[in-house]
Amino acid sequence: MYEMFYELTATPFSRSIPTDSLYMPTELTEILNRLNYVAERQLFAVVTGDCGTGKTTILRKFSNDLDKNKYKFLYISDSKLTPRNFYRILLEQMGFQAKYNRGDAKRQLHAEIEIMKAVHGIQPVCVCDECHLLSREMLEEIRFLLNVKLDSVSPMGLILTGQTELWQKIQLQAYTAIRQRIDIQSVLNRYDRSQTGAYIRHQMKYAGSASEVFSEAAIDTIYQYSSGTARIIDKVCTSLLLYGSQSRKRIIDDHSVKLVLECEFS
Image (tube, rainbow, N blue to C red; front, side):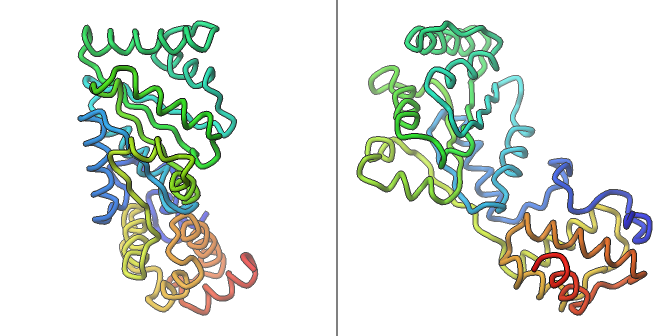
């Protein structure tokens, strides 16, 4: 494939890049620091961003960097999540079989969390992904989970992530009670032109490229098409590297970008 032609040692625009090699501009580093603070203080956070802006990437980095001796990472991604399944999934990830009744499962979860924290010194951190697709009933249940004891510390760090519609939904009057419980809110933005160029160069350097493959004019055109959305940048750059290797082009210029966009992305 193109890796041999460009003398690369890894695939540059892959979702499986190790977390210690990810492109981390200041904005992403700040959000990661906020998530670590949520875990440490057991807070309630909401992270939103448009599709393809790196929510999964930042969660992968957050999960991998957590101290496994201090935290238990729990992850749920289910657009049709119900309260009963919510407790079942959490308990199963903690190593327990959930009781059938929803109320019993909720009490069981709280009891196991207390044991985990008191006996083992481990704090649970729960991430609920794709929350823009969840029902109001489910979001309310998550709020009730945090209200296990009046005026007390939350039983876990809880992070809701989703597309921009999630925050728009939470702004509605019907979700006032949920909104008032949120401790930290973060937004993942698209890359600007400078970050787009830095991202492309970073990915190529990670893959072992010894020279600049994408011209500045090419990066301009990639940015204009992608609007700085990382997922789109990945797809376009992968197609460009395939085209470049087949056409024996060591440098990918803006003409090549326009040709590939017209043939493959229009």
